[in-house]
Image (cartoon, rainbow, N blue to C red):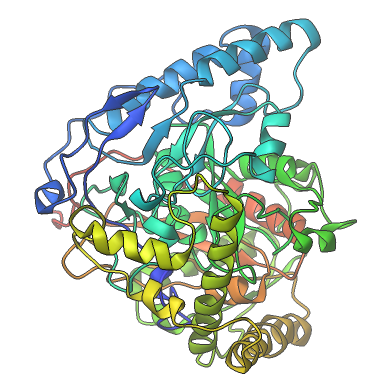
Length: 556
């Protein structure tokens, strides 16, 4: 995520970025050659050969579990199939660069889960299911956790992140780490989403010269391209919903505190959260329930006691739109986009046909939100990152934001070939969280996003949810100028800490478009019900074809 430009837009350029560069990808314990170096030559684009047919394409978690139950597949065969798919598409063929690193222990762990299934039966719906984690989610294994930065190369935390612990306990197999916008897109206002100095430039799987958006770029791209069953991303503002929408998948940004942030490289504790990313709403529901729980390492999770669920699939209802009252928010950044407006109109028609009452428009003024949000993020980034790095212990490659800045300056050619670290420098200049400027900015964020924002709209209209276009079509990758952005609606739920879910809703020029359902705190069940009913009524998900450029030619 970047600096919030227009809060009614993708708000903060910095939350949605991607790029095209180089580096070496460690896969399965070996090095898979990538684009040499991180210099301009790495940005050259060529037409990619079509991927071979994939036997697991578009398989849901339930279908994979059924295959293991019947003996058609095993967890180990699934790991092998997805690993081969990654080798085929990640740094070869379309060169998606969605995966930074594979866990060499995944085949062994999968085999152990297969044996456990034979002896005791499955732990649950995720038993043996291969997933990817964004490379800011800590794992104490043979992969590193680096936020895509060479400054943290070799960093391995002493303990799994809480959500990683929960997923392992549920039987999930971690294939490895997904690429991301370096430092979760909070290093520079001129960054290219999806670019990291470790992983290079992640590409949009539908049209390869387009940006996947950020910062959970690799998680979205890998899931869409069937490199994994599903993935986990994280969001501060737009970093789940934006790449999910532009890569044609479902992504859920939970209520702040529903999922623990312990062990996740931070930006800002008042907005950070992890979240599930998958090809279907049902798969998102399965993943979400596996990760909830009160964690003593993250005080925010105490508020989830009695509100969190361990099985969100119970909310899935094909008739879930019937009787719902849904408001429509029109972000200023998307107001004049004819493709977005056409898809939104079709989506609203589908909701009405499903029995929902539509209130259009719902007015929410977001003009005052951007500057206070950015101020809060700068203050909290310095405080939270210094704490995280300090807790890594004496083996941490860098031990503070100041040391990360110094590392980047000392390794400019590799770390900063396209854009600098202006956000880092601005954050380092901030004082402690006791500063009056920070407190006033945080109070403004809550006033404009909650009291005068979502809370006011929900109360005034008696709404079950608010829907908005998730964003415009993916923009061209541009390492010279950075992200151009095409608008979005993520800031209201990001700043308020409320939940949202994005679902594929339509297409323009071969690129996916989506709508987001937003709710009050702890309304994940309601949002999943509405999103599932909408998904089942519209069926807009399509597998990517890895086109070299958008098919803009008009028919004869």
